[in-house]
Length: 244
Length: 299
Image 1 (tube, chains in turn brown, purple):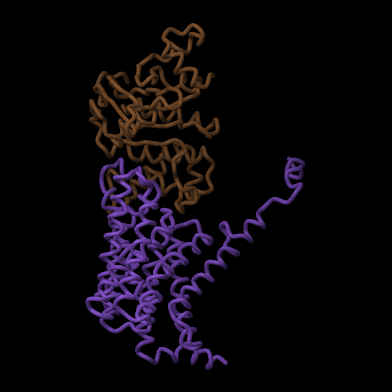
Image 2: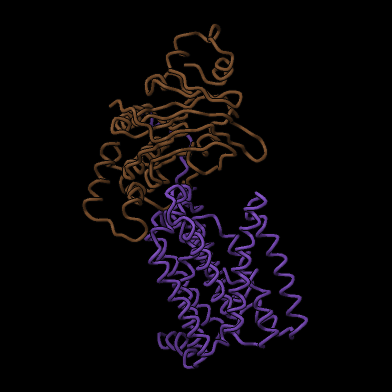
């Protein structure tokens, strides 16, 4: 579904960590239903930009215009700082995604449990429903976490290296689910290093380098070998990116 | 034989002071371990330990002003605890340093000033009571206060249970949701301080976190489900309280340390025998040499 509306815009955004300006003069928009890859070498400000978009980091100048309500935003940090021994089952984790509708007090009804089970089936983790989180593999845990964002009906989803330490079957399942979410209108931003995965998932990328961000079609740097790539900033960015 | 055991277990409670001590310990045993389990899930065990010492100046100040009045001392402890939590998070927010550093510094400061205030104003005996608890000195008024505080904490825990668990698992998730995140943490810290203050009465300022943390850490070795861990932790606390009081009566031991030692024994046994991460379980589940070869042979 190609929609031209964009509920997430960056207007002359400038972000700093402590006293160091990391990114400046960032202008652009994220169309609804688009998956955008965020690439750049280490230290170019990928995490900073994500924090800025999520409102965890106050801009020094400019602003983030986001019309997606708070409760529909989701962020999956890289190797989520989850306590691996946390005594919670997969189903319970997925069900916490109903926070926007249920908050802290409202009881879950049968329909919500059904929805949770459907989501687990879609992600192929039905058989793990009652398994404690501590007994899951990396891939299974990532599926459960995506399950939570599905339960949350996330409309803005930021993922940091979602396919790291994840088996290839899980990568396929997650890619399908992410594409489905995008088709339903969700805005998805994903930090990726693997060029092959990137080209399969999205056609648009933001390249971060030298404190700036450029929106670039993915083909532009996939087709051309690095040696004769056009812009110096792109070369700089891509050398920090694992080749396919 | 049986009669002897029944006599051993019941005769101490012919005395009103033992009954009051038992009631206070039981009230605490149904509350503190739940807080403790949530603390251990957040990795805040040491913080709560520090916090229990940070109550000392408030207790000392109340003691200086009003003498050995347990309700007032509890109030003083509560105030000092809450102030310390608030100041610690303010320091870590403004300086960017981790909260535990601020907490540790403040706790030392509080502890030293507490002991200093106590020695300047009271006798060594009172200091002993305050540091090591005086569960056998609980009067009816204090008992009511203990019971009321514990009930309040339990109700608050029940109401906010989901928020507390979700926040323990993934604070970022709640922060992004923009709702509930702030009050959840504040509520939890207030409940922790309240429980510690109640606990101070029983176990003293030095061991107030004993019934909170030891049963909680022990229960993690027995289950990977929160709804099993919570009753297990409470069970261990109840058992330690009852047996601890009995031992203290019959063998003339100090009650607070006896209770904490028993809970600690429960922790050590869990560490050895618990099926989830216990030392024995880990040794047994370690594959024997050559097992991989056999596995391959079977394939």
